[in-house]
Amino acid sequence: MTLVEIIVAMMILTGVVLVLGAFTARFTQASGQAQLIITANELAASRLDEVRTQPTYVALDTLAHSDTVVANLSKYLVRTDVKRVGGAAADTVDYKLVTVSVTHPQMKKTISKTTAVAAF
Image (cartoon, rainbow, N blue to C red; front, side, top):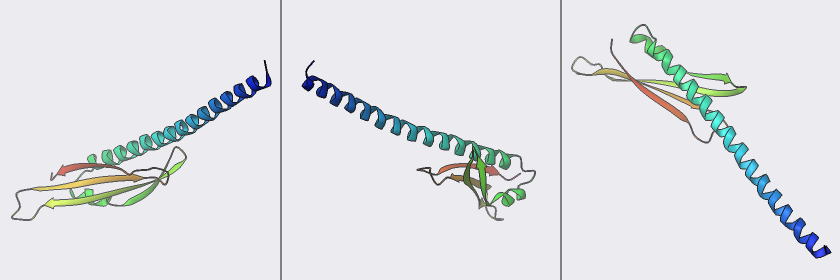
């Protein structure tokens, strides 16, 4: 083999290694984002389970707060909002919308889940 063939082969090998490195970096980032989103969804679902287990309709208002939760060695901000719809004497409807939002500094989007709870 000549020196030119060796140089061309090394350039091809270098290009392949750089492409594989870039792919690995993107794959690692996407995998990390997916894990954060999965954990955030689990935290939101857990908070909504707490909403469903409240003994009284009035007790739902006590869940309206923000917490910092540590899960999988990361800190997530879990915020619960309770909004009452209707409920006045002249209204025919009375329910509360409970929205749980979960954020993390490294997540690109906020995870939100909402449920409606009728007066009971």
